[in-house]
Length: 217
Image (cartoon, rainbow, N blue to C red; front, top):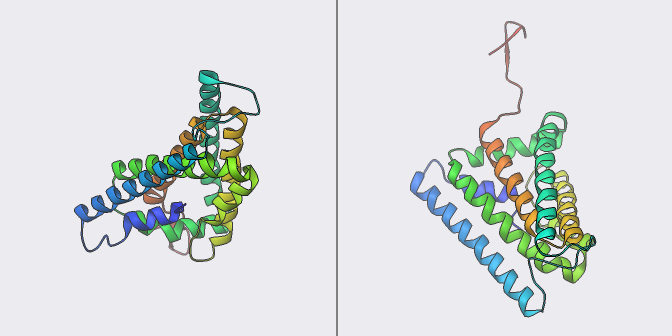
């Protein structure tokens, strides 16, 4: 998986040069790349004889019931993770370092571009890691691989990898428990979309103080 950080870097790279049309091209290329990854993962899954969108869930749910339970868990997981991300940025040094490192990369990205990348990346990555890899190696190993492929330069690297591993484990548990990939895709898209926008619009670094620290500039 290209990590959320890599997505941000691709969205924002070269903002000062090519301009809006170049950014749009990069978004389209990134969406196409994730689409290709998802399609390839689905094709391999089918060739190996299993459905990339469903499995025999621990809860024993089937059909529409499995999808509805998965969606419910996915929405809850997405909402809780988005809230936790905000708390981590306020309280954890590694999260603030990650946010500060990635924020310039999404400068100028449009809402539509962020939404497109969030949906494409969530779908492609879930088809790959949960739809294809998880049935082959299990929830734990697929989550470790998912986390290991989240790479970002700088002091936030290891914290980011651990966080991604935990998220992979949660996505995998929703899939394995319910038997439907709908929830993990929705949760993943919610998290990526909200956090990419949060990166673009919020600066967590403290602002300098004036008048001996009595007022913020």
